[in-house]
Image (cartoon, rainbow, N blue to C red):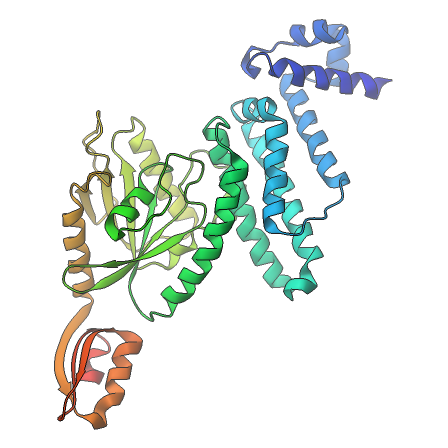
Length: 400
């Protein structure tokens, strides 16, 4: 009977959340609705946050008790979407309460369980080793947690099922892009980082003419997206849009974001996009730098772009941690010419321009350029191969 009463109190609490925000719910509301006295409530729970923790644990138990028969990673994602959607008011209220960290811990555990079970079930299908399973689990856990947080930050207003299906498509495309990008050899890369909704995807679209999702939607950038930027002087650089950073991400979840943000770790340059129209821009800049530090992404040249200069209320900001700062508007294109010029300068500083005729017996040097430098053009003549290229300084003595 005692257990039944405890369940009734918890169920009543979730029903009241459909009518008012959690901050307005009192113990009196609960006991009057379910017909018990205050002593009974306090016999089962210390306070309302304790009820929250009990409800979350019950949801977690339901997931564990249910058979895990997922046939695709998308089905795993859709189960998470259903869990949140079916408990919409509860999830949103708890996320905005003092129990936010507890909520994220539970959701992290649920997500980890669902994905781990999926890959264990399909181990033979994918021919995965244990270490490979762990890598994939960490990667998709990061993705799921990010989607969930973004969805909650937007008040659960979007169709998460559609967002997740788009995510699956984006991830598949990105795998191919990443392979082709790595095949380019030693081409320099710049990772675009910043607080969520700072304008990173809009910047990538404007610079490269690509069509990366940039709407103010849930995790429009669900997976790193890489595009090639052709600079005016003929140089090229790969730009990678990374997932948006988030304030108050519990420390234990930083590890989950490592795989998604590894693009920044291995990039040559960091382009830090700041929403200069946001009143909390300075706090957001601090979050970005602290997260980069947690992820071990330091010691790289940083270009900070104070974005949204066209927006009302754009502030005059400074970033003493960056090597270069520029005022831009990714939406209108204002200031992006200066960014192009700066990237040309940075790339040129690390390479030497070569224009010479290679005798055919020295054709092996051209292969060295292809492998480590940037072959701009080559023309076969009677006397040899006319080449225009840029090569790293350390390679230059071997090709002249």
